[in-house]
Image 1 (cartoon, rainbow, N blue to C red):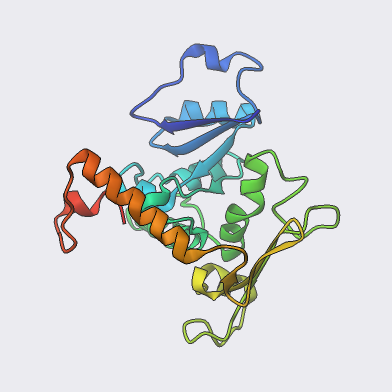
Image 2 (image 1 turned 120 degrees about the horizontal axis):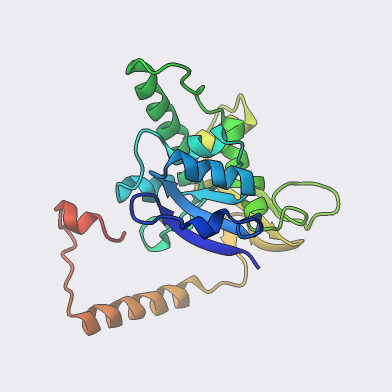
Length: 244
């Protein structure tokens, strides 16, 4: 069983027992991994734990800094995966996380370089971003033998995207297009374990009208039970830092 731990360095510390042989390993997934000390990163690397980072969530809540958790993991020989962390705020949108990771890593590394730091890591590549969203996630979940890449013997999980949208064409590089331009609305076909779940941009066997009604009713019930009355046009930071 994989063990997932929310871990932010200045909010939690690992006690000495975690350094004992066999306590930490590939069965561990540490999420966020922001602002953690170098000795903890070394422990993670030596134990071969899995790391997930959440670019939009970490930025929203101010968890990360210019040391940048993704880069720290890479520098210690780990293969960090992308996570979403908060579906109510960001939706299940790994395209958005890829866009954020690409921009944030380059921004953080350029800041370190312009500050005069020696041996600043190179800017991230689109290929590294795509791996973080696919095979690295499968590896973190312990499922890399069955999902995460189009490989003989793995289950048929396939996403086909349209490239004729005005925000996408013309295409000159497939990976760069997926990482930097494609959005969820560009997804045409989805196959999970060989079964079609979306075709021609439409979900299969999903009643969206019924689902929308159920979600809205659930939202209204929670608002009524809590007594919270949201302002649809609120612009204060405290309100915008909650949910979509």
